[in-house]
Amino acid sequence: MIENADPPLSQWSRFRCKLLWAYDNPLVRKRWEWPYICSPTAAWLISSGSVKLKFRDGMEHYTSGTWVFPKEEDAIQTFEEGTHLLSIRFQAEWDYAVPILSRARSVAFPQEEAPRLAQDASALVDFVARRFPEAKASSYVLRGDFGFYLELQPVLMRWISSYYATLTQRGVPMHNLEGLDERVISALQSIETRPLQVPLHTNDLAEWAGCSVSQLNKLFVKQIGMTPAAFWTRRKLAIARAELRKGRLSVKMISFSIGFGSGEHFSNWFKKHTGLTPREFRQLHSDQSKIS
Image (cartoon, rainbow, N blue to C red; front, top):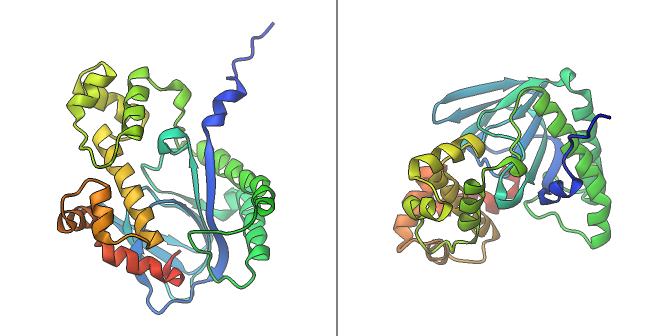
């Protein structure tokens, strides 16, 4: 008798997903170059035209008929005039905001290589378009009652399923919390529950996890794809971006809430990691027609 090696289904209850928007439109812009914000995950199908992404380590250029999943790094995006884009922004994560698939590099391939992906993307776009028929591009907050949320889930999960299958077939590594070293889990729990106003010292984190700093760094890079310090920065950036998008708190209040003693220090830190000052980021997202 062959023993079933599959894990219990309860393992996957740690997965969570969220749709930010889905649309398929020609891009109508007053300007064609603006910052690309890497969070949440982006999926683009370029029907016509092209896009260039200028990252710190170089330029990436993609043309019509291509699926593009940009890496997890902010960039400058430049679209050719007349570009038609199917754009989906979504979160597909485990606990501790660990993405289910690595985003260490951009992934791109011809549309015809993944017919199911395009089919499920179109179904998701159509579902959202029926709910928001006047929208040129949906905002960061899709709104609806509980009934709409329940109706959305199977359509969204089919898209996530296609995303997972298509990218893993192309060698993109999967992050699996079930296989994480206990020392990594201990450190992740500490990072997740730590108040953002309290500085994180890797020495303390390693001591809490029961290993050396070098061991913890190696384990994190191998299993999470980044060091604990980088993961802490990623968490703080995610909170800062979310608060700036909401627009309810001043930049000064946000800076204090995530542990900066002055707005100037926060602004310099934020620009170092995103290429924008907090006020520039907020202004960018005050006009949803500029987002792709």
